[in-house]
Length: 125
Image (cartoon, rainbow, N blue to C red; front, top):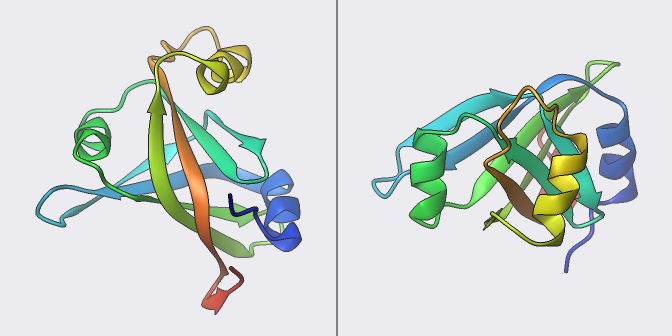
């Protein structure tokens, strides 16, 4: 398992606004969505609740890797890339159900397992 660098982990706790989750389809065509229902499950896993995925779910089901882009309150951007796991049950799913607002369906927990991390163009991992 690859842990987030401390700089990125601290920035995650200081993020502002929605994150952007990007995936690609089988033809390599990108798809990006805004997401507000997100959490850090562990130092190697960021989670996005699947409340209303459509193309994103198709891409995940086809084996897409993913990227999460976020910005801090100070306006600094960070990007985390990695493989995606899709949990409809188990520990990651149960954790998502605890923080995902009840007004949203929380169909599944989309876990991005950290492989790379950037601050702007600077590769941190």
